[in-house]
Image 1 (cartoon, rainbow over the protein chains, first blue to last red):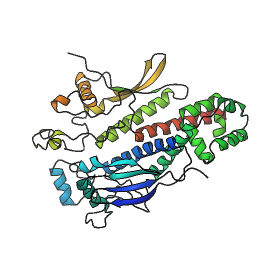
Image 2 (cartoon, chains in turn orange, green; image 1 turned 90 degrees about the horizontal axis):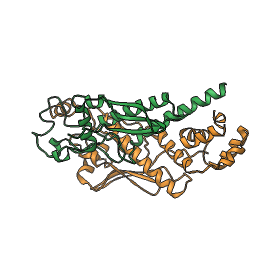
Image 3 (tube, rainbow over the protein chains, first blue to last red; image 1 turned 180 degrees about the horizontal axis):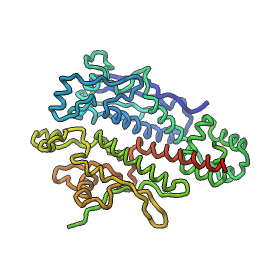
Image 4 (cartoon, rainbow over the protein chains, first blue to last red; image 1 turned 45 degrees about the horizontal axis):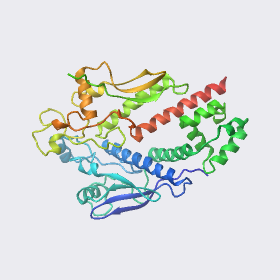
Length: 223
Length: 171
């Protein structure tokens, strides 16, 4: 069984001052505490960036969601106000400036916190409250939803690479490996929760690990 | 008058794995990533976040920049007026001591005007003139590109390793 787990929306929240999605991507992951903290930081940054990059091109980062185009009237109004006539959720820029992430026990929470004005705008687009009359342009996932496949796939790689990067593989052990079967036996002990594909990928993506495997002529076994 | 610094970042040192061809691919990927991120008002430098607003919105003054620039939108803050700044982003391989390094930044042959604009944005040299720092090249110690850009480089590195494996298993 691999480390791959989808990003689960544990809870989507809406209050007077905040709107957020609490995401769990670590509860099934075996790793030391400091590695998990590092993963939360990396994944948090990545999800915030992907949210802003997708929204910036009038796309949703949420799987199954898209942004309806602006009405003709509003598009003209935006263009006359010297903004692009696309649904990039930016007029003053204050709402997008307010989106942030914070670490939680098993992942992160992404949204707008302690800012009633911007949280209210964001709910207008995401409609966590159920009372928005605006066209839905969701940039935060609700329970039962996930991120687009490409985003989820990269998050899984980030998690696996962080775990692989934290393991020390003694050179003396690598020197003893003579066959492909030896290698997989050993790597299966080092990475017990990774599938073979995940082990291959993490080694190939790591400059340190891949160079060790080149040095001991083991890269050929990773085909 | 002090010479304007050329803004650049040392991305990676070349070695047997990171050869010139891969460095070229990585360099192109970084430039694409910088342009994509900047076009949406997001700094491509980790920790910097979204760019500060232009003066018209920041100071709530309809006379301020970019009010007087015909055709220039008020947002997103995309560091683009004529396009010359981002057109002068380039990558190259340079000797750094005994090693070779992949460098990404403003072309060293760019005009002094372009270099000055890049420095003003990247180092915030015009803060006193109400032009905020808007970092687009990680040129300070310890600075990195955003995770979204770094992950593309990791993917290119993986492709290079796959090529090495294929070649060595054929021979």
